[in-house]
Image: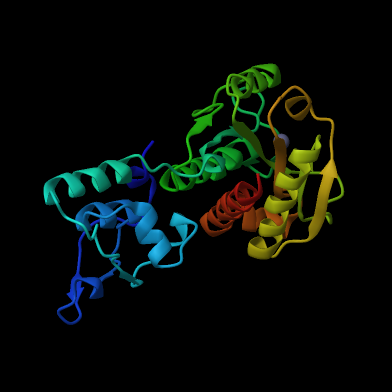
Length: 275
Ligand SMILES: [Zn+2]
């Protein structure tokens, strides 16, 4: 996977020439541009462009940033040869390996198992709505994604783990909504069953609380089948209680669902920076 395809920022260019010196070329980043596309355009390497502008993480490039284009190779016995060499170097640049894990997105329940059901709200439907948003958002950020289900069908718990266990470098995120007989109970919680999973759970839970403004029920150890049988880091997210009437109203809204998805994605990104 090369850098160019992986970034959200790409496209058109503004080259500003400040003065006559070859060293004073700058470039203002426009929408959809990447270090890769800018480096290629100017015939310099991605590494030298990032180093010149003090970047260590290519994902931190932002629209409007004015980049200084590093000077090209000074000795030029053959100009064509020199340009060709740096271009090759640029195409060989890869994203840091830590960003390449696959995310297995698991919308809980489905088909004959609708999960919790309160006043016409089916948990399996809410899970799918959030999961689809998580999938789209992760893909736009360059993560490979596998969904355990894409429609309202029944998938066994062991099958869900089997899907995750096909991949060596992956994380598993199961998406659920909660319910209990005590209708006063509300809030979000995230379950894990291993050390790495615990950190992933913490990253996601803190984002959920920050964005959804729901009660923090914490990160919890839970020996759920999907967490136990999955080899990669795995968490189970409970976004809110549909048994609580006020929270149910919120859970049904597009706004809540998109904020829940955003929280899950930001949590994954935070985890990605560490592992
Ligand atoms: Zn559930």
